[in-house]
Length: 236
Image 1 (cartoon, rainbow, N blue to C red):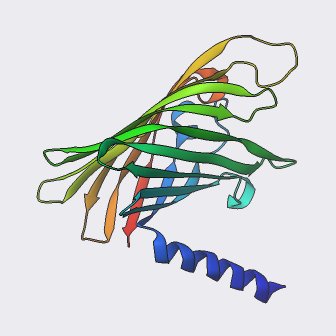
Image 2 (cartoon, rainbow, N blue to C red):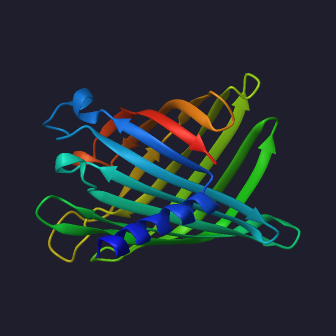
């Protein structure tokens, strides 16, 4: 059994090494910033990212693993995978995306409800800045299905002779206030999530920096939060 587990782990890591562009490790001190009443733990998050363009468009994938349970065990695994398809000579592309995950809260497991997104996207380059955006229909698979809309923009650029990298994304989406068929609040809420990143590139592979998670209506009690991390990144 141990050999099978080690083989499976080696296979997963080899797969990421083959396709991933980078591996990140973030220390998230949100308990130290906001207090234990808001967040019970500081924790580490590992992020695997892959972006692969081809003649038909491009594929983007990331996986987050939060080590936020007792003794540093993994408490949340979350992934997003997106594909943009070129449409002949049209400047717009067709964007499809899947989001979902699973978690563990010490005594019970849970699923992060799946989300399915489809709509148009657009990518361009302004000077040294790479920009991409999409506006899509979003199907949130809560107990009570939520039909929504999401706007996303991403950016990245290298400055100071490529010693500094600035990147990140902003998401703005709607979803039902009530995720179940039980009595509760009605209507929609608007959620903001943006995570700008700032990296100092030691060389072409190793970087140190931070990712600043800024959110509204996303975390505890639907409040506004700013959660910076201390991070290292290895570029494959």
